[in-house]
Image (cartoon, rainbow, N blue to C red; front, side, top):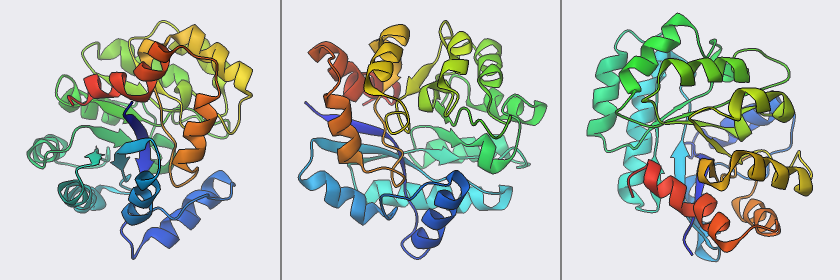
Length: 260
């Protein structure tokens, strides 16, 4: 069975060490990996995890285009990678950059309201979703007990406002506030990924969330380089899921979303 890691961050080799250090400081966790494409693909050589949906988040409006070029170039070199573009709500040319992201062959958009520091359902953010809806899937960081930028209620409002938007709410729709996310995510028309969930939630509770939301809505993700993709896969495989549930979460759902 092909396994796809649907949530991996990569950085330019010259910037990776600094970027990984910054992410670790932001989340106050020791980072497991180095954040480079070379490291990620080396892990895949002797692992069932063979494909990766990769992204890097624009810290400001000016950096988005350059980062999109970087992701596209890596995906052209490595067919194992499926690239997501990035945007920033302060951009004046969101529509033009979405067009360019499509022309680069990228397969979606990644946003991180907490690190980009915007309310996920603000007016300026909603203008981005207008440009994305019906054209590209959106992977959006969701939830943080320390901030309100990406609270699940904001994610739910996006879902309700853009019914044709294919959205993946990362981290079961509410990182570190998983239970708080349930009433907002349970009946929404969005997918969710399992990245940065298993290191914080006991296996029986992870299983209960999978049963609650349903395997049709869930994607496997590691949140590399925060966690090791192979270790995350091994934890996932210890859950008492059916073969059909495993296949949907590990590959089939993502293949449908990204048109593979």
